[in-house]
Figure 1: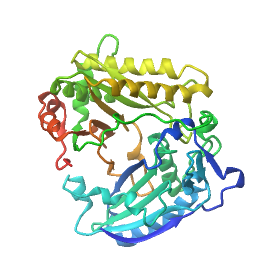
Figure 2: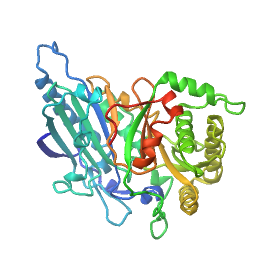
Figure 3: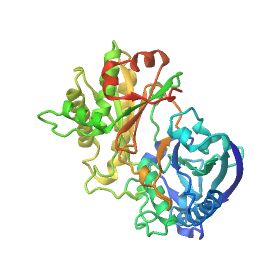
Figure 4: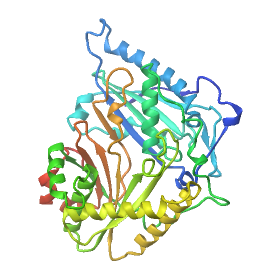
Length: 431
């Protein structure tokens, strides 16, 4: 890959003085400053008959539009153009700008990625390897990479300090709408940071004991694809008297969980991260910037998909009763206390295997249209963490499961007959 250019994109208008400091909520304070979320959106080559313009000229025009609209959107999402403070209190909204990189991939076509051929996608996302060029406390980095065929990859690396997955897709949707010259809804984006509802900690910022919870052991990753027809079959199989219509996330999670249990001689516990915006009363708007997620714990001794779904539902219900039914001002502290208690319990269970699930399903990454059509592929380029499973949408409504296990466990898991009845191993996904 050849790096063509790099520059800072600053807001089209300066941030007002009264908005120069963006305060974290107590949930934002929990997130480490080095945690970034990488997203890749792939767009096909411009058509050859586009007013007799060559794809190279069209892509040059598209790059200019992206830079211009990014500058405009940053005036609304002003914290993203600032810098993280070192004291874990918030963001200096100083308009220093977002790094914007242009790159070109030689000897590869976009179709190579769509066909599942081995292509190093990590180089398409601006990650920490650019810290020598850009400040490490930057909140957002953008990289647009062009392929020889004229295809384009838009890579985003966004800090998790103020952007959970819901906040990130809301930003991308608004940026795309502005690029299309539509009128995105900015009503709540800059007026109601999440900290106005869930304030920061009094005194020292909170910390959760993650030693023994987040694994740093070597692992491998495979991607398993659940087609819509297979998910429909799983929903029928998982339905019960109490849960007539299980969701696709529930049945895919439960199927993987069930297969992991089959391969293990120990009890299996799982955690699942959930977006809480629609689970509180009244619901929060998607434009509330920040982290509003919770960790659900589930356990089950009966190895049947219907029981697994019921256990997952029970875990969510118990979380909601414990953390989301009190006063709004106490929500953050309740969620933090629950997470601390849960992690302490999970780490103490030396007799059990722990698997950590996270789902991006339902977040409309495939609808991010900058004006030249929706992406033909959306993916992530996150690092690997042992015993973690991430679920993301496929374009046709299926689910991709990015499963990270030890090499020994993966050799058994990838041959599980129940798993292979409903999922296929994505070619060349083993890393």
